[in-house]
Amino acid sequence: MPQVIISYQNQKTLKALKDFSKYLDFVIEKPKEKMKVKTKAENIISGNPKIDISDLTAIFSNKNLDAAKLRIELWQRK
Image (cartoon, rainbow, N blue to C red; front, side, top):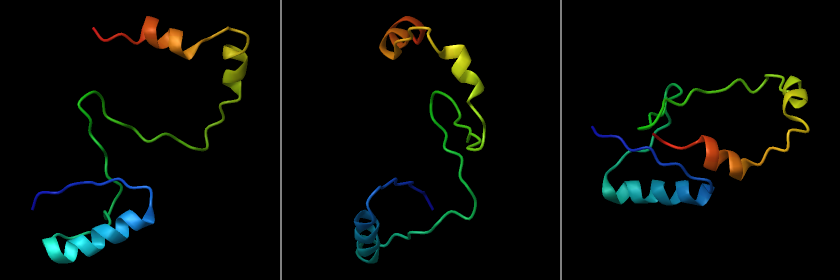
């Protein structure tokens, strides 16, 4: 059976989908294991939420970094 993954933020959305499933003949189920999401660009790897990033503060402090400038200069697709 083909599958579709739907991301939602509001619990009312899930309730509405459950109601629609009764009439449109589809099943809503939780994945048995954590699913990897594939994109056309790169694979997404889950990060470690317990990692200590305080050491990076010294590296990036007082460097006058601008996110918009970095995106324009460095993140160009080739």
